[in-house]
Image (cartoon, rainbow, N blue to C red; front, side, top):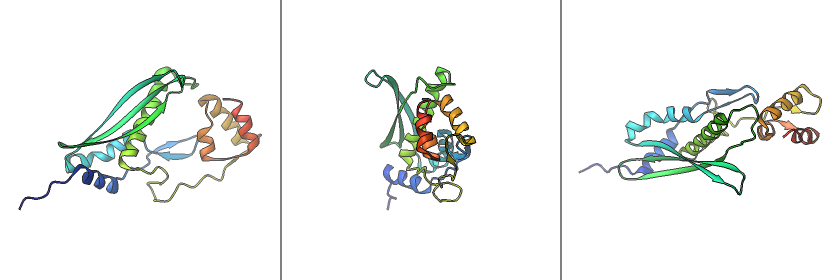
Length: 184
């Protein structure tokens, strides 16, 4: 009796349940570990031959005058000889990002889009710390106007022109939020 061939959905389910990718990179400003698109691709390689699948990423630049900035659509696709499954991520390119040359602005958005398209495809939960399986706790650091942490936040906002990462990672007083928003 012939052995039943595994469907692409079954192969993807194996990857989604067995996949492990450590957060091997460190953000020195935010003091957190993270994984990149390259880390995810490296971790998925052992599954490719074992399950007879391929993974690729395509990107499309969308210029949309309604938003006033370019958008990169990243599509991660897993396929076998019979079928394919895709997941998409949409990322805006911040043309006003300070401290970056134009290629870096597009490259940063591209990397971010690839990472999240792959994360969507492989069900990678970025709230879990790969080292110990517990949710990353929000740091106890409080940013208030006049503190040394506030001074670091000011430099970051001036350079990056965004407050999102600071608000996601730290407790920031309302007064500090108002002051930092004026720097953007």
